Image (cartoon, rainbow, N blue to C red; front, top):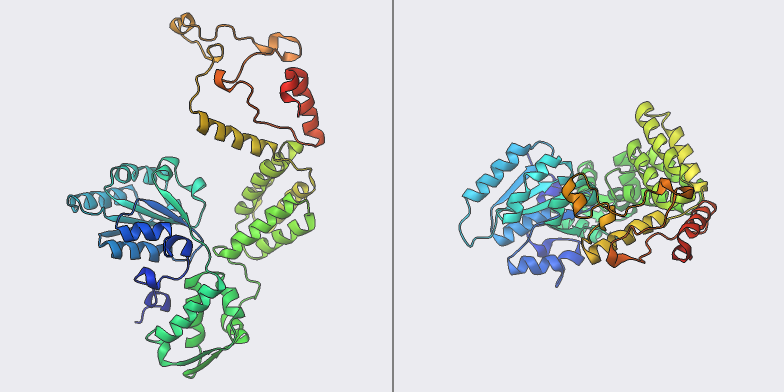
Amino acid sequence: MSQPLAERLRPRTLDDYIGQKHLVGEGAVLRKMIDAGRVSSFILWGPPGVGKTTLAQIIANKLETPFYTLSAVTSGVKDVRDVIDKASRGRFFNETSPILFIDEIHRFSKSQQDSLLGAVEKGVVTLIGATTENPSFEVIRPLLSRCQLYVLKPLDESDLLELIKRAISRDVELSRRKIELKETAAILRYSGGDARKLLNILELVVEASPTDDVVITNDMVVNRLQQNPLAYDKDGEMHYDIISAFIKSIRGSDPDAALYWLARMIEGGEDPKFIARRLVISAAEDIGLANPNALLLANAAFDAVVKIGWPEGRIPLAEATVYLATSPKSNSAYLGIDAALELVRRTGNQPVPLHLRNAPTKLMKDLGYHDGYKYPHDFPNHFIGQQYLPDKLLGERLWHGQQNQQESKLSMRMTEYWGDRYKE
């Protein structure tokens, strides 16, 4: 049985690799590492069908190093340890580390990811992970810190057209037929920047033709696929574009647009929990302290969707969407935590002032821990001015109240407590 077109056409070298010029083009970061023959562990993040697996295989071929593959769906901790043990025993001094490729690494559990740490840190294996999900949320921090992160982009129109022409002219099966690419809009639209899907569609259309003369038109592609031209792909580029439009419409206070993009996701079969999660994030990031009830309502909508499912789940999702879109907006908490994180990274682990430290033992009390701390509830209005930041960070401002009814009250209270420190 013949291999699928996508497999027959899989590139074997970087010169045949289409797309991702920002990573593998002349002078790009990955190209330099590959040409130098020394590749460190990294994670490829991008939508399906943009060349993550292919790139890993090309690197292994180029470096002439053993290449191990694990499935995040079927492999357990034992499988990970077996591969690491095999890689360790089969390696000689001064050899390039074997490559361990894990597709959909975000599906690995925490314990599975933990089992990789030692081998990656010691260089027993060079890890190449591939994921369609944001690694910041799905990959444990210790593993992420040991890997570079490279973002792959959906293939653009010129990349896809180059791929079609290559398939028609070079593939052993397709080159036997007379194929004319008369129209391309439909096949490009359905592929959604996914090379594998594009080649699958091309193969389906050609194989369905009764003669060796094949003229590809938009109508022909639509008829062959029997799909809605507005089909929504949960795993493709449109998935990312529509959720982006949804969130931006909420942020932009346009409830009509937000409901439209919500309907697009519902009609396309999007996971309702994914939509609900994005609403919770938006409530915290974009509405924030301007209307704290937004986070409560978004979280309640999440719970309701989990409990009742489709189709009724569309109603609490719609309620939360309209409420968030029509709420006043503030990102002061979002900006505040990012400013605090930047300050921590810049200044390191500053010591906790002695009066703020806990003193559960006599030794700690003798050392001055907790000494001088003033309990705010013992003072009028439950407030007493005292130092809470580390000594070297006194005077740092991280939270800035924004111009809305709720935060104006909060800023006014902080000014009453702290004076000029919280005056904008």
